[in-house]
Image (cartoon, rainbow, N blue to C red; front, side):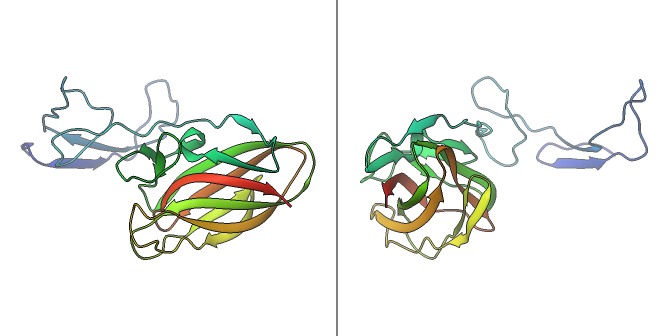
Amino acid sequence: EKLNPGYVYQLNLKNITAMDKTPVLNTFICYTLNRLTNGNNKAPHLTVGIPKAKPVSKIIVAQPNALTQSKQIFEAETAGRNGPSVAKNNGGYTGKGYIDFQASSGEHLNWLIQTKSAGEHTLIFRYALTDGSRPLQLKVNGKVIIKALPFASTGSWTNWKALTTTASLKAGVNDIRLESTGSSGPNIDNLTIERN
């Protein structure tokens, strides 16, 4: 069959093995004749029907930050992330930008916070959401604390509000993580942590 420009062909090759008998991990491939015009006709991933290829999101590994004050702000754009991107197009944020969740599942934003002593802490997430509700799962040190942290509409992307909850942190480094698990998240500006 002839391959035509403008189409993406998906192939699932079954019953194949590598020449050296190594198991083949993925037998599903996509092919297109489309020309991707992002400057050098090279794209970091397959894109369909988009004139300019968007780069695959880069995984940013969180770096530990010490909690040195009784109440301290940690910017979202300096946190670790896989999926969400840093944005600046909606005003009113603090720092150098905010985090924009893109996908309905599989994305995360995380802070590594180093504390001197264990105890209950207040977590305040500053966020914006034009309408609806976009809950995110909250994990602390790998344990689900809140399955669906209820980020409700703030009325517009430039109207920032705070969502407050509490969590027990251990002495040492704590991984505080927001994950999308069925809906895209709101825009996250920062996390304020307050010792109780």
